Image 1 (spheres, each protein chain N blue to C red):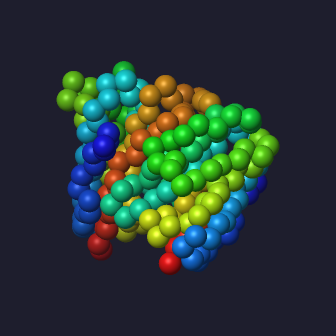
Image 2: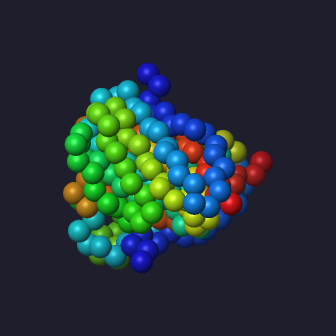
Image 3: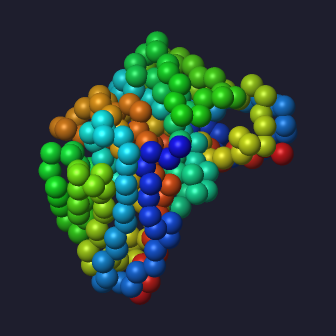
Length: 115
Length: 112
């Protein structure tokens, strides 16, 4: 069981370039999430997918798009990267509920720098 | 707008001491309050969680205290160990698992 995997681990982009961050989970979870983590800001939800075929905006969706490719995979796309998108990006997944817990399982993160 | 306020931003505790991290929330519809622990270079992992129908939950050395009327909750780490050194995030959600709002994090350092 790999849990939640993310690729790439590190990426440097120039302003205006595009890229897609990949995320996959092998726990058969229905829900998946994308967060960004910035110093002093905690984790902020970008987009989430409650189930295959659905996506919804979180707190900071501007400048991002997502695709729930299938139940396992949830990708995050930056169409035209900006320095303000320099951050660490985390993907997470969860079941709706398990023994009263709504635990989210996080991947190892992607550290993105936009110059 | 920060819906979950967390303090302190950083904390240094001696080995064996008690670490206390506080959080306050505004949205009275929040009904699930987890704490996540994050080690450097890793993703966060669930540590302990509480619902507002109980005032305290204990798991080993970790205890959540919850004050519904004050809209505050806190994490207590008893007998703190150097291995507890990590960043801790409180969080809150409404209706369970989907839109989780995280606090800004507390970096804990436990010194020998």
